Image 1 (cartoon, rainbow over the protein chains, first blue to last red):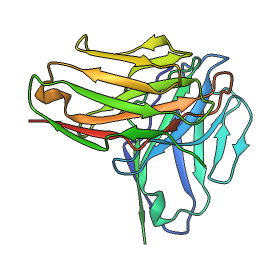
Image 2: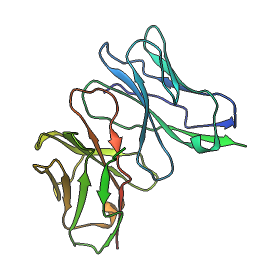
Image 3: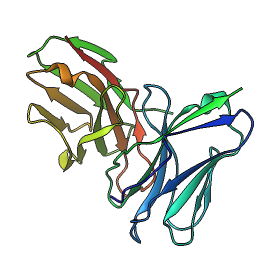
Image 4: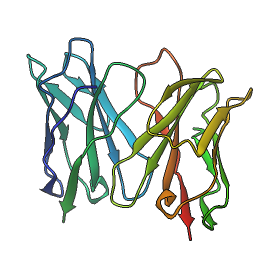
Amino acid sequence: DAKTTQPPSMDCAEGRAANLPCNHSTISGNEYVYWYRQIHSQGPQYIIHGLKNNETNEMASLIITEDRKSSTLILPHATLRDTAVYYCIVRIDYKLSFGAGTTVTVRA
Amino acid sequence: AAGVIQSPRHLIKEKRETATLKCYPIPRHDTVYWYQQGPGQDPQFLISFYEKMQSDKGSIPDRFSAQQFSDYHSELNMSSLELGDSALYFCASSLSGQFYGYTFGSGTRLTVV
């Protein structure tokens, strides 16, 4: 799986958008970008995934650069319940490999 | 909606004992994955099963074994437990051919004393 690089932590104000960057410069053409989050000691939760095009669902938006070397997860209106560790994962097969994610703290 | 069920939620064992963790996937899901998450660490892939056959293997110790049964539930068997085996163990399930994310269970917290 391609290696990903995320900032170790970031803060966000409640109600504001949270933009989480991820670098995956060694991604290959058929590897998907996945985002998961883990709220303290709970099972990781799927957020969104994409290959080339930008994606949006009820939880978040995923923006992938044209060269696919980086992506940004956008939480449009962060709430306190969005405080979690966010993982950016790229994969080609069915196995997910978690690296060091970004600890996002949403502050009131 | 039905989720992935793991049992037990908490387990305390002594060193050198054995432990069995169970995972019941979402109905119709045919693939099960096991992950281990030590204190302050990220989840690490252990092993996966598709249609009752091992499909992939990660950093699973030789002391651990797992299987998937005909009803698709899976069990992770851990023998000769060590203090370092204390961790959260997560199971996830998915339906093969669907490339969106897995669904994880709430985990089993194993404490070895």
